Length: 63
Image (cartoon, rainbow, N blue to C red; front, side, top):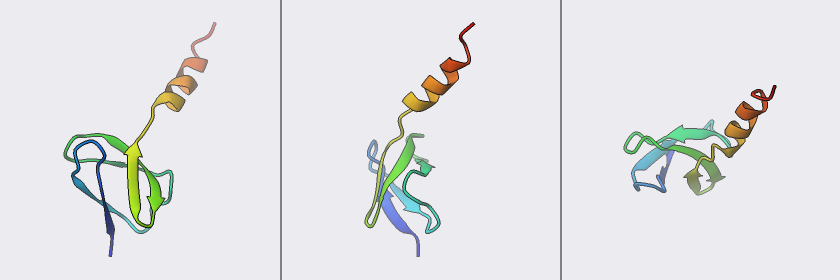
């Protein structure tokens, strides 16, 4: 049976599939936030940071 965690933004319950691991992301269907799984037992979510993605994307813009 899948466990549930609450969205840290809107408190909407989110099912956490058994195959997910710490670091995987899930979407909140209520507020459209991208959340990162930070704990498995009990499951806990945190807002996913786009800082790493933005740094990687900007590295290719240098000429």
